[in-house]
Image 1 (cartoon, rainbow over the protein chains, first blue to last red):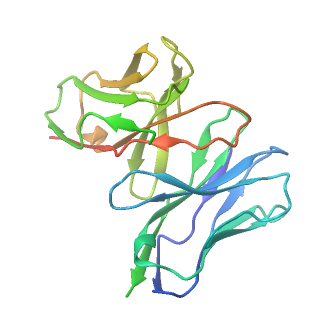
Image 2: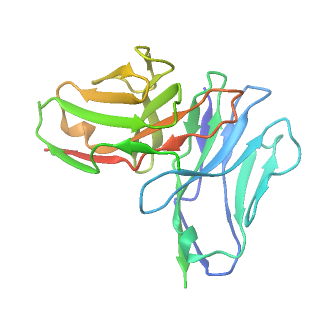
Length: 113
Length: 114
């Protein structure tokens, strides 16, 4: 069965600094998708970034980028120039062969002003 | 803006009550999902639906049922609520294409069963 592990229950970063959230996954699929979702205090989950496993180039979305290491099954999220609005729960997820998402436990990100 | 609307933000029910959680999307999505979110466990799939009147069990369907009579509406039913069903419930929807599509979520219903 697929699993997704986020080993950091909570992270904190100074405003304007860079932070990296870790995610590892386990899958037997050769092609799959990986996602990072953000859940702010409003509770509405929104997509931050996604990566197709067959693409070697790391995905980027403005201040958000990933470090995708396929052999190591690692998919970390880097947030540059952290802003107060980045404070949220961040969830890593992997889409399996049944097209269902397998979710990590989440990392709470705290931004210190 | 696309929208997924969950009928209640907070709900308090008593043990043994029948509970209905409603979710409506305005994006004409074929696929709708109900997740349960608990601290330290992430999101777990309860049920999903690929089309009207169709439903599939997720990872934790016990104690739940669903109804999808119209494309835009997906209801989660707790037949006899129990205290271990106290949780955050999230509804989501999406088109199904090649696997990379994103989910659109509602704002969640925090259910407390006393």
